[in-house]
Image (cartoon, rainbow, N blue to C red; front, side, top):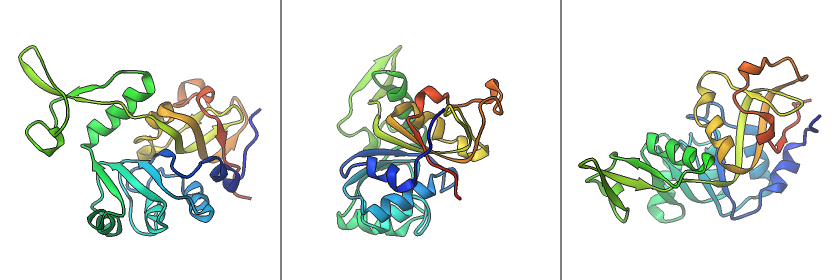
Amino acid sequence: MRKAIKPDDAAALVPDGATVLIGGFMGVGTPERMIDALVARGARNLTVVANDAAMPGKGIGKLVSAGAISRAIMSHIGLNPEIQRKMISGEIEVELVPQGTLVERIRAGGVGLGGVLTATGLGTPVEDGKQVIEVDGKRYLVEKPILGDFALIAAQQADYSGNLTYSLTAHNFNPIMALAGRMVIVEPELIVPVGVIPPDAVKTPGVIVDHMLARVA
């Protein structure tokens, strides 16, 4: 049986300067309590890998407002004018990555691949400084894998062994990021006894999960 921990204890595990994968899609499926705990701890100099920067006051947007992020690797920042301002001013370094390429780079890191070949970005600034190879007469960019010191993910259900299920849009990024984090911390909506989640419904097996947050009292 896995013991659940409090959000502030989980935030204490994440040191300043860490690379953190954060699940979610426009704030849906994002571990909000974990983010709140990082803000409360005063986290600084984080590199955040995520699909997007959400919006001011929501999800990753809270970390942006709190000055916790020094570098962001994302596919979209269009809904958060605050990170746009900080990128322009140089407060946050932003690497914009095409969405499909981003998730494949994370998956490559999680399963131990040396990189991803993709034609997306050829002939654009995305190509600058990257290796280009030819396969069967076609050119591809070599995109390097992404790994994180931590993966902070949200799940619909967790059992006492850490097996996880996700709901709808929360499937975006969360299961892939769970593979690519050296330490995985999950924020479940529900914690249920082992056996409640059917084996074929498990999207992330408990062996991957290091810690999970206790339910709200």
